[in-house]
Image 1 (cartoon, rainbow, N blue to C red):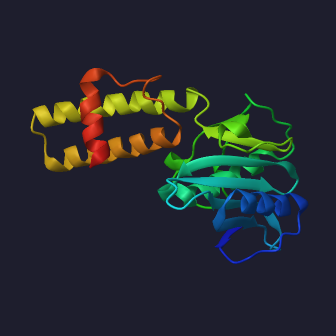
Image 2: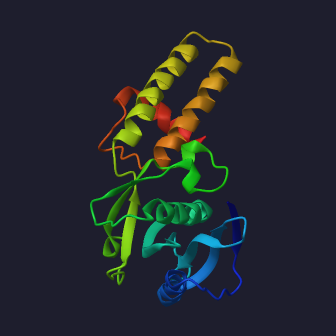
Amino acid sequence: MSSRRTTDKYTAVDPAQARAYRLAGDLGKILGDSANTDRGHNTLAWALDVRRSEGDMKALIVGGAKGCPTLFVLEVPVPSATLGLMMGKAVALAAVGRTLSPGDELTLLPEHFGSALDPGQIPGVFRIVPASEIGQGLSGPDLLGVVAGGSSAAVRGPLAKLQASLRRLQRLRETEAPVVMRDNEVQLIRRLLARLQASGWDRRADPLPADLLALADELAKG
């Protein structure tokens, strides 16, 4: 499966794909689109990057897939729009053959992305919500919203590893361990932080111990 991205005007053939472009055009300005195709260049899934107003800090992603009558919308920070396009397609591919309702969860696997991606960037679970929770004016029988990180199971393991790694770094600093050992631990911590962020980590629901919080924030900013 290959991926392409273009901002050129595209005439969609699949009815759901055509509906996605109409919806995106009604919502705002389409700044980018992306599609996964098979070896015969048949479109399998698509996603559109929409900005509802100039200077908008959030990108609205509209995603769909062949064989899935439902369109999905999610919001991501503008700097993460490219990843958002990948997620929009992956969510729709994971939904093919399923009838979803608000409250359901979708587990995303690497094969849903159709391209190489750091596993730490893949939220393990998406929670299905009414489209109206994503944006005002979004509604319809075949339109649903998705929110990353619907299950604490996607957070629990990486969070435990993060806590252990932070404590290990504390000990390395206290004992003035070699710089290379400390740097390796810092890189591991940053990878774990990125993985947790992608999994929808809610710091209020799953907080770090107070004595580790400042160290985690220091490394996240670095």
